[in-house]
Amino acid sequence: MLHRVNVVSLLRLRSGISSAFTIVELLVVIVVIGILAAITIVSYTGISQRAIAASLQSDLTNASQQLKLFQVENSAYPSTIRCDIPDSSTNKCLKASGSNAFTYPAPNNSSTPQTFTLDAANGTITYRITNDSTPTDVATTPITAIAAISGATTAVGNTLTAGALTPSGATVTYQWQSATTSGGFYTNISSATASTYTLVIGNVGKYIKVVATATGSYTGAQTSAASAVVSDSNWLAIGVQAWAKANLNVGTMVPGTLGGSNTTNQTNNSIIEKYCYQNNPANCTTYGGLYQWNEAMQYVTTEGAQGICPAGSHIPSDNDWKILEMQLGMTQGQADATGWRGTDQGTQLKSGGTSGLNILIAGYRYSDGNFYGLSTFTNLWSSSESSSDAWKRYLDSGDLTVNRATGGKGFGCSVRCIGN
Image (tube, rainbow, N blue to C red; front, side, top):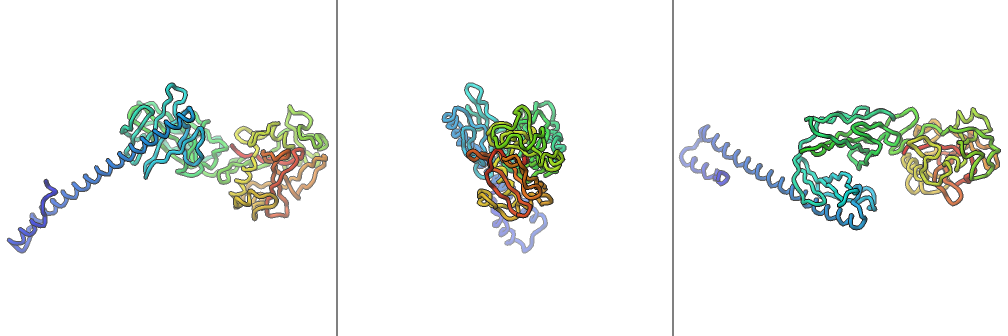
């Protein structure tokens, strides 16, 4: 075999005859060394690929056993295999070894028997297993012609287009997903249809990805793009959230004396009723309406309910407010506390503050029917109850921080909506 050639002996043999090498002899030695190097590289590559294949098959075999056990315990295969949320009746954390990566399309839990497909990939090598098979090699030809996602850096309402498949002739299924960070854990966008997706409030500032799956020998290929943190005309992305830029102002104005301290209704549950500071409609135009909690929630008590907010958004929960406050610099401990907390988050939230939310000091309507505090302090509802009261946020014109407290549901407070 070539790789057994003793180059040193060859050199010694030549040196005993003459003190110099000819060019031809040097070339022969170089060629022999090159052949040996090539054999070594090819051998290493083959061993490396076989090791990767074995690792992928092992990962799939172990994962398949976990999925089947999950199905026995929960009467259905998991909907996802994400590891950023706790195990539940719909989720199972599956971790691949090393640089291997799993791909898990939604299982078919409506069939009898139920089925699943799981892929494991490392570079260009992909293996697949199903509920009734062993790991098999998948021939992969990348789908390279998914067009750049148009409109990916634009505002709410713009259409994102997946593009066409090349080579043609295959049936393509597109699956749209979003994540808060590039390369992070993606979640399916249920509102997407076919090869297009219209950017909605909740996905402003997130990363949008489209995964294409085709028939034949094509597996999946994907294109990602950031839907940059944009300032839509009505919504502002702050970290992982999208907040309304203004206090809500919907409904019919009623006098502050109507409703009293009643926490059930104001006067007419069939319409949205609002208070305007000092019963002046101009104040609603400037500062937004003031609403009793039940009116804002539209007479449900579900945390995070849409309430009187527009479609695609909801009344922020107490935790939504905490997430916002922590994105502005509070610690978890400060956010969980009551009373005045944080450092300068109140200043950031108020008009002219760096958050961009420009929360105006709108005052509030007290349960006695009178109005207090315009330009001095403001209260904003959350959708979270606390016994017979509800959690709210309180800003003071002269305080740098934010107050977290509970208030009677009969108060008239401002509402700032948040995207779903």
